[in-house]
Amino acid sequence: MRIVFSYARRVAADLSLPDGVRPTAQRLAVVRAVAESSGSFTVAELHDRARRFEPGLGLATTYRTVELLRANGGVHPLLGEGRPTYVRCHPEHHHHLVCTSCGGVEETELCAAPSEAELERRHGFRPAAHELDIYGTCRRCA
Image 1 (cartoon, rainbow, N blue to C red):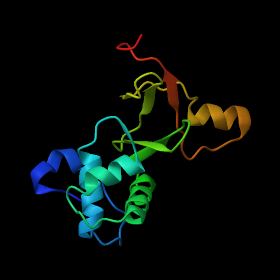
Image 2 (image 1 turned 180 degrees about the horizontal axis):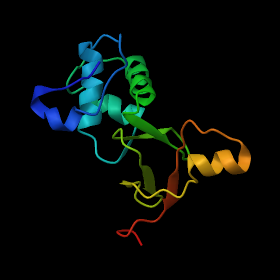
Image 3 (image 1 turned 30 degrees about the vertical axis):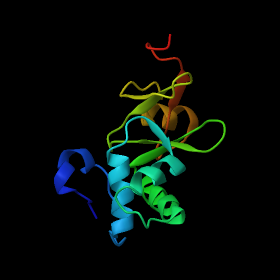
Image 4 (image 1 turned 90 degrees about the vertical axis):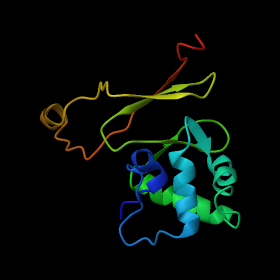
């Protein structure tokens, strides 16, 4: 099921809930908050933003909706200390450059992973997917 808001069609077009999941007002508030997010966010921060659109939104619903979006590729968890942090993703192949100073996240299409053919030839391994997040300092913080 594709969730598209008339107020921000192009912004939320890549955020979707899995097929068969009802687009309730609470879930749509979380999707809207993700669509309007820039950079990384915790579930608690997202919950606070989403409650502006749906004041009765529960924290558990926010966690479940983030997990639904993660399963569909709309958000990606980042490693880090403390609470898990997420970043909004587009569906095309990409990786993340994560600044450990300011917390900024930039997407890059650069990929150093070996090809599927190379992995098959050298290791007899058939990859299904791969993820790569690179942690360091962005140009603004350098």
